[in-house]
Image (tube, rainbow, N blue to C red; front, side, top):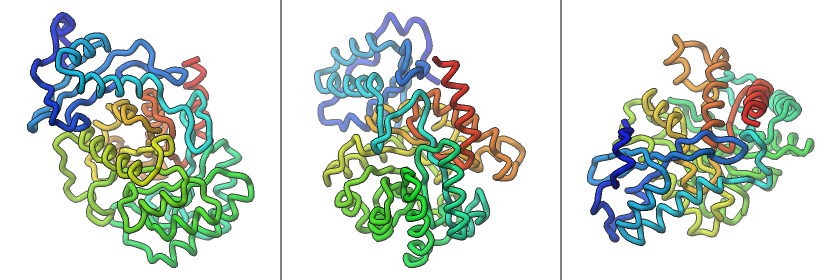
Length: 363
């Protein structure tokens, strides 16, 4: 638990922590604890995490106290912490050409698969998938995410030709209504074909680590979404282990952002996703949801994909996937309260209604 003693505000953080040779992105983390309202964090209080040699210390403090400590430690640390504060104070205001509203953008899920955990292949046929996407767009989705390969726990890989057969006609059909589209794939060839067919965004559960994916994304010059997943879909839930799940995910995403920047992908064209349910236990998922604001420090848009995930069933008496709407909305509102820019959901109309009411209270 963070140190919440009032004595802390009259003291400094631990002295002698900074070392110029450290990779600071791996050792200093800041999370805003303030409510997120009207596109910014109000009345900020921060949690600062110090991670070194296998130990993690957490403290709560004002920006002023943290900066006083940083200045006492050295200019390198000052620059690093100031950048984190800037990211919190100037959170991402647009993504993929879409200006963020007074609520998170809503990404509707269009699974063109026979074995999705959430809809059991309801939209496997091209006509059904297009009709489903159109209904989501009419209900207020800001982005439609088209995927042809299930990445549920235990899912098997799909042949390239089959994935293309599933998604390309759907992308072409939904582009006709003017929808903003993302292609949910981890394969470079599918990325290229989908963008040529009209996809505006690449959404990759492997954060562009697949063969040729990083180069393809760079050449296609479209916004990208990078997700964290520990392991492969076939085995990722067998025994996920982390030193600190939230910080380990942060470090991974930081490195993937740097990899993208190294091939010319601008940070403003990057959205990160901590990957709820992908190689994570219930406790890991809850820790991430509780500390989501920390990812705003990466200086990118943040996506939350918690809709109908199994962690809801583990909390709520093993309720079936299609009966997890209330839990999904609760997770989505948690994301909104911590500043996420995008939520990926199955139930667009219900999510929009929940966010509209949430935004009315905030305003």
